[in-house]
Length: 530
Image (cartoon, rainbow, N blue to C red; front, side, top):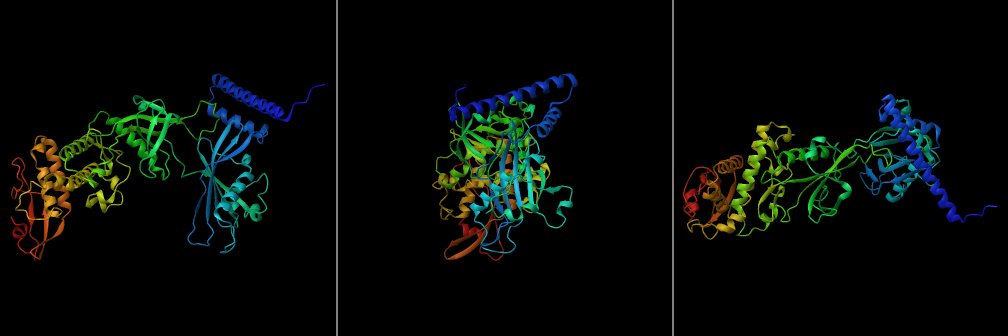
C-alpha cells in the first residue's frame, strides 16, 4: 500500500508535473515547427497560428490561465466636475495562457448610473470593480492580437450597436461581484477589438545600427530622473561604474511620435559621431519586443529599440551658468563652440529647431555641447524666430527656413550671455557710459563688444556666422527700454550693426552699436552721454 504524501509534498509534486508537461509541450511545438519548416517551407509564423488554433480547439485553456494587472495603469477621463461619474475608464493587464502572453488594454466607455448622483463608487472602488470585471471576461473567445497591445472597448448595448460588424457581445466566464456597479447591466455589454493606438511603439532595431555597440535593457540601471516625465535618466551599466544618460522610448508622458523622435536622434547621432561640440552616442539599448506573444523560452521575438545611451556631463546645462554667472566663465569660448557645432549640424543636413540654453550642456573641461539633436522633437515658442511662431508646423518648413531659425536662436543665446559679460567687463567699461550696471543698453553694448572681439576674429568662419546670428536676432527683435537720467525718460531701440564709437578700453575690441532715434524722444546721443 502506497504511503500518503503530506499535503505540501503533494502540491509540490503536482507543480513539478505541471512544469514538466508545459516544457514537453513547448519542445514538441518547436520540433514540429522546425520539421515542417524544413519539409514544407512554411513560415514559422504560419505554424504558430496553426498551433494556437489547435490549442484553442483541443486543449482546456483554463489550465495555466491567469492575469497580471499592470501597476498604476488605471485611468479615468471625462470627469468635468465634482459629483459627475467618469465617462471612460481604462486598465492594462497581461493575459497568460500556457506559454503564451497577450498585452491588453480594457476600456469601458459610458456611465453606469442613469443620472447624476453621488452614490456611485469612489475612485479606488471603481478601479477594483473594473479589475473584477476583467477577471470575469472570457478571453478564450476573443481574438487577441499577437505581438502588440489589444484594446477591448466595452460599452453597454444601445439600440442596434451589435449590428455593426466590428462589435460583438462580450462573453463572461462568471458574473461580477453582486455589489459591482457592472453587475445589473452585464448582459448588455458589447466589445470592440482593436490595436491600442496609444501603446508605446518600440522601433524595430535596424541592422544598419550594427556599427554602434548594443546593450540589453536588463543591463541598464537607472539612478536619477533628468527632466520630469521626459524619459531621461542618469544611469550606469552593470559592471561599469561610468555614469551615462539613458533616454528611453517608454516614458510617463509618452506620445506615439516620441518613438520616431528617438529613432531620428539615434540616426543623427550616428552621423555626428566624432563631431566636436555634439553629445556623443555610447550605445543603443535593445530587447526582445516586450509585447511578444510567445513565452519567455521562445527566441524568435523581434529585437526592438528601447533607448539610447549617451555621455553624461556633470556640470549640467548652460542655463545653470546663466542663472548664476561668474566673472571667470569662458563666454567667448562657448560662443565659438556653439556656433561651430551648429554649423557642423547644418553641413550634415540637420537642423536643431530647439536650440536654447537647456539644450546645451557643459563638460568638466568647461566646453559647450549640443544635445537633443533629433531636429523633430518639438520646439519652444520663446526660442522660435518670429516668422516661425506664426506657423502651425514649424518643423515641416524647408531646410533653408529651418537653418535661419537656428541662426536666430543662436543669436539669442549669445545675447543671453549678457549677465556673464556684464560681470566680466563692468570694471573696464568707459566711465562716459554713465548707466547703471543692470541697464539694458550697457548689457547690449558689452555683448556687441564680445561678438566683435579679436578672439572671434581669429576664427573667420565662426565670426561670420556668429555676427550673422546676432544681426539676425536684432533684425527680428526691436528692443525698447526706458532710461532714467536727470529725471527725464528716454526711449531707445538698440540694434547691433554698423560701427558707431569704441567705448571699451581694450584696443583689440571694436564696439559696434547703432542707436535709432524714435519720434518724440530727446536727443539719444545726449541721453547716452556719448
